[in-house]
Length: 218
Image 1 (cartoon, rainbow, N blue to C red):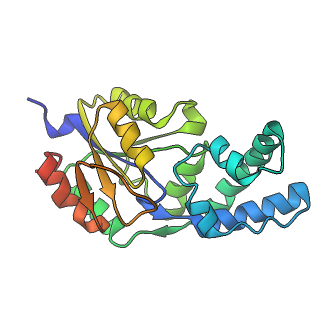
Image 2 (cartoon, rainbow, N blue to C red; image 1 turned 180 degrees about the vertical axis):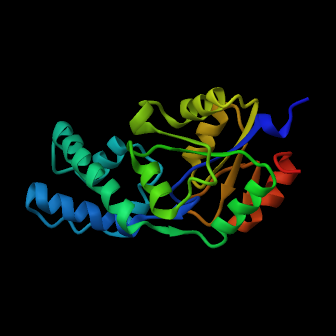
Image 3 (cartoon, one colour; image 1 turned 90 degrees about the horizontal axis):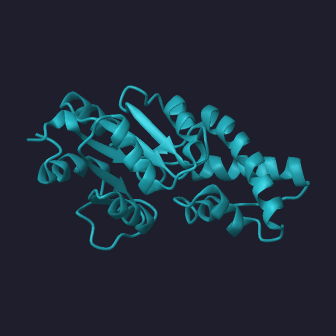
């Protein structure tokens, strides 16, 4: 029989735990102006529609005026400054997020974060919002070089997890969950849609009930 200690709830970050699009847009506009001398005027909405992609995929969408190598070089500059900016300015947790995370911790739920972000972005989230007390592990595309499904499996393996559930807000999250062999809960308040999720939550404080129904909370 699999115990609660062998189960884990793994979260996407952007569109699931918080919305940092305003800070990201501000930081990228500052760095693009510094590096290229142009006003890109990226908006928070333009950033939101790219959340969940790898950083190179985001660069392909945002920097079409540059060649591939130029795009990715500019993205690396933006990523580095973004981490610094996010650490200082933070983002907006979705309503009920911290209260619910505290409740889950108090009830013995093990939690981690897996994101397609650049290296250092999850740390910036944890630092800026004082979230270390809730999450025991995290992984990101920029650090491991792996896509989300592989990072989900990686986090499970190194923490001795037999069963996990992934909480995300876009179809790419559900696809990665399926590839990793774990069910996906759709955070419907986030940035996208998911077909046929295991459960749907319309606000973060609905998560405990969804986890009970799936056997991840006693």
